[in-house]
Image (cartoon, rainbow, N blue to C red):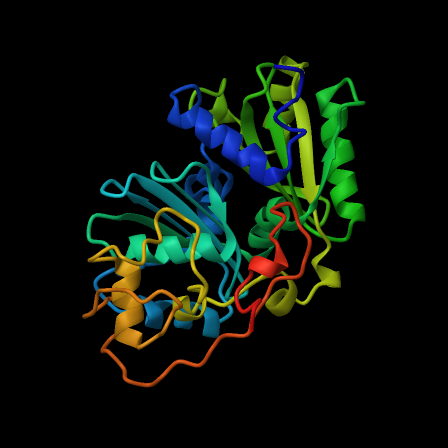
Length: 332
């Protein structure tokens, strides 16, 4: 493998490459590890309880109505899946879903739809917590920001300063990934207003990872590992309307696509589908009807109102290269 071949990939390929390697037992790092870590944030985060036995819709709408910023991670042993959603100002700004039933990670609305379906299951493990808005936006830079690889700087400590300065000059928050001599992502750094605000250890076997909690200890690590490389992501959110350009709402019913899904997990003929149950209870009418009906914890009680066709789309170019023609309502 050539030097820094992983970090030169688009972000979605970068995360997929890591997750595939993790599934094969070659690495510890998975795509969900690139989301905020509660332990690393410490006192910067607050408890957020997601009760899967109550209406998820009501809980999501509460987060949206209060413009909260938070992170929700789930793991389902039954579905052999992991997922994480990043929420900023009450809107989904990043989401990833991976399962052994899928050939690669999926992102955005489709990932959120799968996450909600898994979240409705009884066996799911949930980790959820409120985070500061600047942390949420810094984490989102990896999903929407431009990428800078400091390959021309020999000393990693100097590369760190260049990356932080670059993010600051972009007038937005950002993130920096530190790769070790084996090209393994070791640390994920969050930068806001020209300062390093959080260090997230990515590899469980990272050298002295428990001691790297701030810039001072990070500099010591980089000095001890002079072959480390850094990759920065930054985006100026001042130039975007978050509610329209880069995010979508938390109402899961609006995020299930009305077109025929290509994902293996979306099987319109699968009986007992969580998604089918949800759509049937809400009287939604996708192109391919689901053969299930009944109660779903996504809603309090079934309603009989007819849902109108959604008219939403995604037209923002970002690292995940979402094709607007495949976005929700593209054919409307």
